[in-house]
Image 1: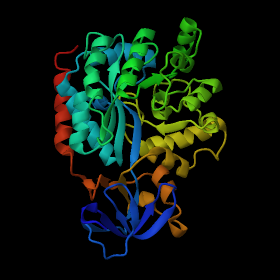
Image 2: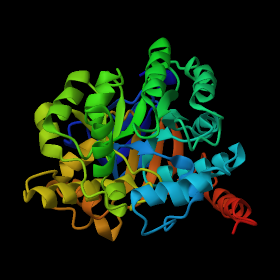
Image 3: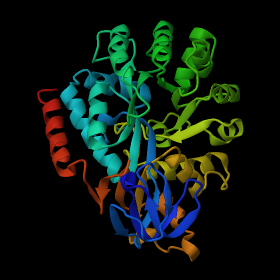
Image 4: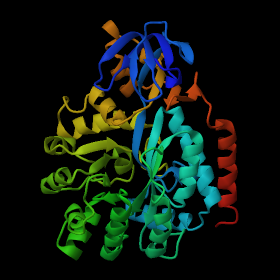
Length: 420
């Protein structure tokens, strides 16, 4: 092993690999994301007692509005989506500043790490601030700059937003942990012309588009009435569907649209807690997505709309339960399936506390670990990204949680100071 490999050794531990197979004994976690069995004589950065730890890939949160940590989890609780947006979210976001976004994103990053998540696909205002915070925390991200024709506090119009965003998109490099994307809000907040310009900019910079789609029946009905096409069909017509496009929610869709997603090689994001909290009347239905071969990931949405905060383990549990409930099929979305969806594509490692009572009983040959993790949860002890420890023994190293919590409280107080 090369000296610069920066591997760490966990002894007498259990590791879950990318195929959900269990491996027991001494293991090495390499800086490049690989793992290998340890002989015990390698030159490593650190040797860690792994007897009370379960080693897995980190969680990946594929639809977030990170700085929404500024808005309490009971914010506008009880509002349907249209009122939630028009009466609560948009007026509140009109007062956003880069400093507010920085504080909200720092709080979000702290919560992600505490819950074993190292990647977020975000869409929120002042994306350059979000990217800076994620980089400072040592995390990964696909940070989308919002584009819409109204409710855009950071710019006067969509064209201005796109022009500014091009500067960030030009910095994209595969070697960077944080990449930038175009976050076109939706077919109801973006005109056809705006979406087409977003496609042009994306093609010019080989950048991805992240967009809400078919979240509610009203959105679907309105789009069809205006264009004669359903939202996914309309996005395909406009050239938005292409490899790498991220479609958040994708709940109210026809099988033909799902096949279009598969053909275009997009990523659909299942956000069950948000859909349920806002009573959208339905969540992404996994069986036809599986049949079509669509790449489906998990997302929590923002703190104000999510029923699970930024806890992707809780989201995975809910995803498993809602699929079985909606389809009357107890074989759908097993714990292993939910875990695979939550960690798909991760190159990073986390460890979970096996001493937690919620992880007992361990079962014969540790066969209950994944079920306990998904359905009960436990504490995230360690987080490793590119060989760097972002969290050790239950304490985050790259973010001061206490300081961030205090800053968030102060930001919220000042944010609403003088507001009726």
